[in-house]
Image (cartoon, rainbow, N blue to C red; front, side, top):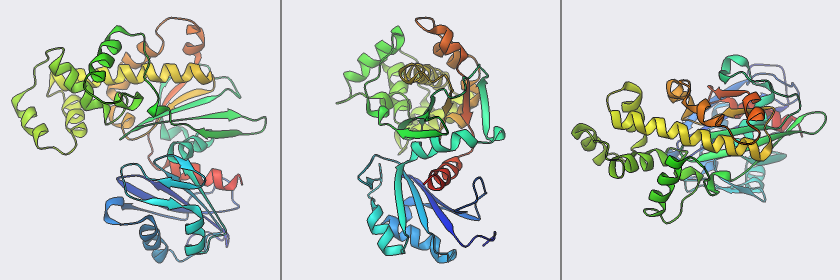
Amino acid sequence: MNGVSDRWLLTGDIGATKTAFAIFPLLEDGAPAAAEATFKSGEFETFEAVLETFLSTHPIAPERAVIAVAGPVLDQCAQVTNLPWQIEADTIEARFDIDHVDLINDIEALAWAIPQVDAEKLHVLHAGQGRPGGAIAILAPGTGCGEAFLVWNGSQYIAYPTEAGHADFASSNPDHIELLCYLRNHLDQVFVESFCSGIGLPNIYRFLRDERGLEEEPWLADRLQDAADATPIISEAAIGGTSPLCVKTLEWFVSVLAAEARSFAMRILATGGLFLGGGIPPRILPFLSDGRFLEEFHRGGPFSDVLADIPISVILDSRVALDGSARRGRAG
């Protein structure tokens, strides 16, 4: 183990696809991880099994642990979204002899990292003129859509989770309203993540194909017919420019994402900045950077001058959530 600390902080980032762990010196603020590893979540029946595998190769005794979970955390218990893992802080403390374990939402962990994130881990979409101490918004579309925010308490930023991805979607854009009506006729429930997520991308695709009459190429129909997950196929075809339907789908996705970002930024008055995280934004930078996102985000209306000043960046590094969990752990 690198470093001289004998007091360690364990962090984790738990998702349906992958689970990452890192070990940080507990008392060295800003110190990098001494060790880290990533595992395929589906290869383990329980969270305890994957944590035991990690600790067996890094035999240290962590004093604290902060575990970020893709899903809501209530009373220090969490059910991982799209994975049959029930995680309880008390159980982890007892089994692994850790003095204190905190479970937090994964987007909250991402939020904790923002005040100290390195510039090279960001792609700036709009420099803006952020206000010191202003609230900060984090919007993270991946498999679902996570949202969190940071508030300045007079001495530091404190992160707060939300379940805004499961709130109702609202937009005054006529195209978005038409899409919303279509989904209401085809889904039992329609949320923000029905549009702004990996789940939402195929919904937009079907709308453009079935309602707007955009042609679906035969080769694409064949690939999608047998696919367990349509999202990477649609994204790949859009970025490669091999399907006009997929290109249009991703353009619409960026537009609805901007509408949700605009709404979220206004709700918390995010004058400190807006950050796009999650698995999707880094992969679609050409579409986020072509002006379409900013056009929708800055689209007129009340407080348009406030929106124009909000800095907007994409988080490029997927391991930033581990850094955020470490900052949360060192904050006490």
